[in-house]
Length: 267
Image (cartoon, rainbow, N blue to C red):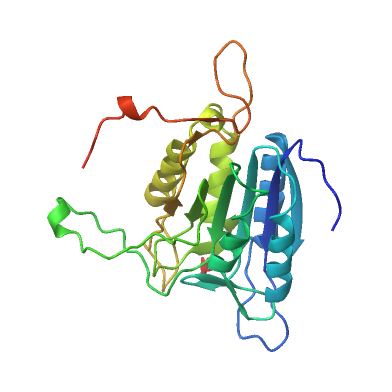
């Protein structure tokens, strides 16, 4: 494992677009476009970017185990893009990569107090989102959703879709990751606190994307954020002395005394 100084933030891009012979999973169009744009966008924001493609499940596990023990300045960011089901993505060999195992690797002394971000571009089931609007909370079907306790403290996981639902991609790239890059390339968004930025990402995907085609026409996609952050973080912000914006990936503790109490194809 090569040595690396901990004086920079790191991004790890892991994508599977082609699967081994005999694996009954379709080739995923647009993967290379996602990777190229993510690399360009994150590099401009000061991240050291490493790219890995078409790894087997065991290779993915090994890679993340090693990455979890490498130095990082303030923020580690990972993108996992493949076919998937709830709780896992698939390696090029068609075997599942349990996300809970990946997350647990980062619960260690090397990553303690560091910001850890995961973006998961993969289906979480076969359901398709019709984008139905409701007028009241009472009309919403309530689901029991328990946060995944394998996610370490100070970690956020942004999924391309809600539990049980499909995620979309096409030859121009995935809706989720291309929209993320668009937001980060626009003036002002880089200086947003993480949860505000993810809210904008969800809103743009939900309200601007609509699938086309005989079988998927009109279907929607809604990203889903799971956060165990204990502080506000600004992972993409650059230091600006005159504006008071926090430095790259610095964080601010929340003042609890002042907090108000409130109750295509498919990836």
